[in-house]
Image (cartoon, rainbow, N blue to C red; front, side, top):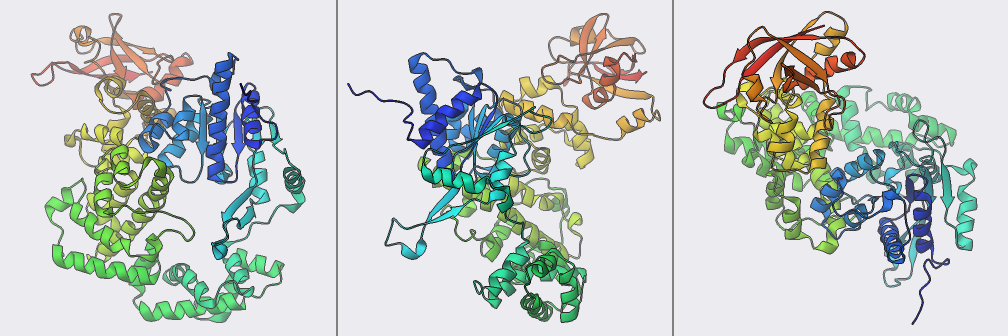
Length: 638
């Protein structure tokens, strides 16, 4: 029988996997890879190593032990978005996550949150985690620092590749994840270097004096033009939208070369050009050419301002303008009362906006990326916005081996580019109707958000905007909103903030426990009004609250006996598993409900510090046929 030694010390990925398991016993581990396929390969080898440990009866740290059904939002979303066979879904059973470009935004955010909360022990990532994310990392393991791509100019020679090292500042950013102040007292960095080439890379990257300076996008273009890597026409096309903004804001006379030059000299590009002894003349000339053309094509200053607000180039704006005029000529130039009051998806508007945006240059895949669209994009978009489950719509156009292609399409086109295009379409609609954007019907205003979040109602958009990732949960909560409360954002927020915990965890039929906990966490941070500020300033010493949750757990049996004016006892509930600010309401020693969450948040900290509050039943509505529970409103003083 052939004996297999694991790990093979000359095998870099096997060695890395075993290092991960070793260092995970001391705390959280971050593994940095240069390429997405390397991320998946490292995760696969970590899982293989853990299975060898299991087979051999060897123990690993608790954070890397297999759990059949992890109570993680990242796990729930990975199953929904990527399927059971994706390395992330399988890795999360063992507390191992991954983080790279093709990962859909909701999944990526959940992975970050769960890792930050210590629910994921190991995270394998590319530079997507390099900046702007503060995470608790004890050990950073550097697996690779070179990106490798096929040389498109030599497609007949498959062995030819372009080697592109990651930037040294990205390397040091990843190293800086370890031992972050306020999270870990100290950290360690491990560079995996089994070969001479790896050692050479390590010696190159460890030299902090060689970190590249940060260059502005305009300076990079100027340098590329001077080095003749791009043409003047290419630069002019790139400058279209920025110059349009300058013209709209009338920051500078963009047809005056002296004014343009003086303006650029005080900007970052001017400082960097002067530092590197590069003349600004080509850039000044390109901006002037662009400004003259834009002024000729869009002589109306008001229309230029509208075009500039879209962030799109003039060519795209004029394409949208034509589509808007066709839309309004077919639909009518007056907005009906029914349209004004509609808070749900307008399918006709969606169809026109999508058709208009599909042709825009800005909506096309970024050069060098592969973002395959479904054959019938309109059907896909309608299914997406109506909240059809991810697994169903993914399976119609992408195979299980194309999960990264699906993630790229969602991230690049569905969540980013199409909402951007829809926003531009609607801004021009508002202009043609002689309205401001916020005067459009609310259902129209939210079309970009419906596209971004994959929901079909204004209320569901608002829930998603709080940071809730589950589309089904957002739609289900939105369906329960009582319209008699009004359609304003403020009234909706007040309702959401005070949803009874039992309603979320017992009555809602969709969403996992982890997703509902995330919703609770997000809404608990919302400040519904200025009551808390007024209370702190002692301008408001009496609070009014409805007793929430009377209808659950037989509480109505005791609540039915509460007479108007009687005293109620308030009791802090800091060990509540879902809401640490919860305050129980008792009558004659029996639990009848909770203080409204927005009011509980104001006084719970004071109660835990020893401050006493008194509550009295102010108003009591007896049970009704359609609501067989008493409704109690109380006053709280302290």
